[in-house]
Image 1 (cartoon, rainbow, N blue to C red):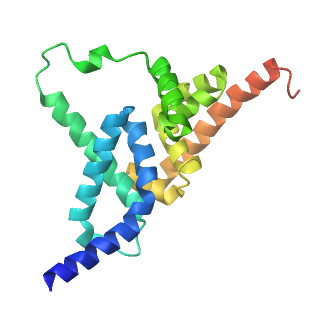
Image 2 (image 1 turned 90 degrees about the vertical axis):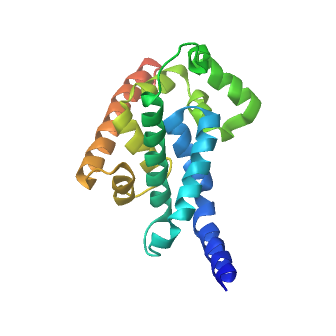
Length: 190
């Protein structure tokens, strides 16, 4: 009987969480900026989520729950790497220029790769998005790209909802100011 229960539990887990896998991957890419690390992070997130699924409340938001697990997994990995002694010659030191790498990945994989999504914009627009401070960019992307509510974003980032509202507002104002100037330089608007 326990096999039937665990099979039913697995089916329910898959039904609730698998529709969010692409979103979790995009979130992991935003954290790690590396496809292989993001894939590992998603795998670890789903393993941890499955193990903790017994405590998942049916009335809660599965996507926000998975994002929180993913973020915590990323932080744990970062802390583990920071505790290891550095011996030099790391593969990370051999990394290619991120923008050139993004273009190569885009040519190979198309627009499915969220890291290269920004490269579809003009250089100035891309620069403004990258100049946006990380705390604002993360909240803004969770809202406008991942379509999470302010409450869900507050839960994922573990900050008060008022802070989320402020970060999104400031992020949008930052982008608006720069994009209006850019549009005017190109002859649009006033």
